Image 1 (cartoon, rainbow, N blue to C red):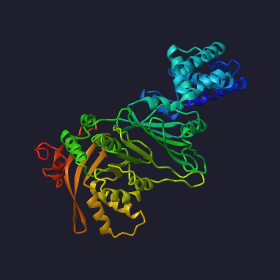
Image 2 (cartoon, helix red, strand yellow):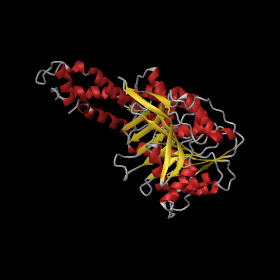
Image 3 (spheres, rainbow, N blue to C red):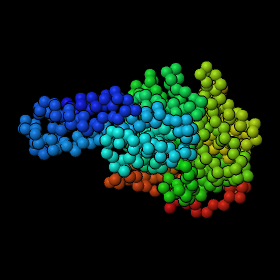
Image 4 (cartoon, helix red, strand yellow):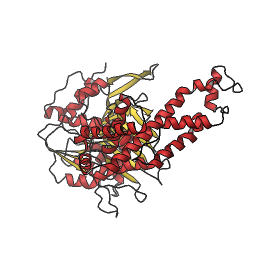
Length: 508
């Protein structure tokens, strides 16, 4: 049995004492309770845990020797355990007391939300000072400030998730039950120290996310997609479908959209590729951005959309509104899932068909997943040049196969050749984006769709990323290069007044 568990008996007694006294009475000092428990406990040499034995084995210790020397070795660890329990009990006691004793004026202050955050923090500080005096807690100024922030986040925000949401270096938050919370930072997955108390605490935060959206999650409908106020995308799945407990995935998006200069600086594309893509958007080419999950397709789509002239009318269609276009004349459409009765759903396909009646100059679809691919292809083939969309695929060739499959999912019994002809005439350019093993995102291919030859769609790479090697730190080292081939749509550049450097397609 581990040391933490050996202390568990006295800690549990102390915590039960706090609950027995109630939030309106002074809470017992957990340190005193633990000390009393150790004084009355039998003085018996504790058993070694496997981890403890392994640690001390490296230092030449033997598990059969006297264990009296372990007291000093684990003194800091015991103190840390008791301190954590003190803060946990104090946080719970103050939160309950605020909820139970709040006046009408204080309730109105809480209802104002983040606008009154400083006043609410002062309110929490006053409760904290009283609780510390009554319970003889001794916390440093930094610990008190951190505790006030935690309780404020619990009252106003998403509790333990608030610090992660405020961290701009984090791009994704993955909550696997109350105890395991991972984040993606710099393309790498990392386990955090953040925890929820239990499943009930996590479910309370989930309900807080969904309440403003008029959505719900329960055993009858255990799956839901939503978004936060800042535009971050949220996926929720709960038991009985999730055996690890309530699971929450948040895809964050930068508050300030990345520019093409940012992507060039990050190494996502070269300057020549950036100039070429800007020309393609201005020349009203139909573009498909392909890539895997988390490869940066939406970021690239945002950058491409920034090249659209402000005088054009743009209609965006998404499952969850993530795009942030800078132009003034933009109409944002968002699909809607079915209600509790299973009716009222509005799909991406419905919105694409409706967008054709809205006199758009350009249609931007966040992602095609099924039958809406057919409607998107028809829109591109019927005068809506310059449209952009994304799809999941591992290579430019794969994305054509996926488009065929998605088009057939529309329920129209079309011959395969007819489908391929639609794809070849609708799509002008495929941008393939990938997340490499070091977490970096790269535009690995910019590929032209040249047309049909027999029953096969002909593709031609114009630019590509070549990986040279992996360095000692696991980072990908490579370079971008042009293939030396010119696209067949050079006339479109001339018609729309787009000028490109003469040597932009030259292979160096």
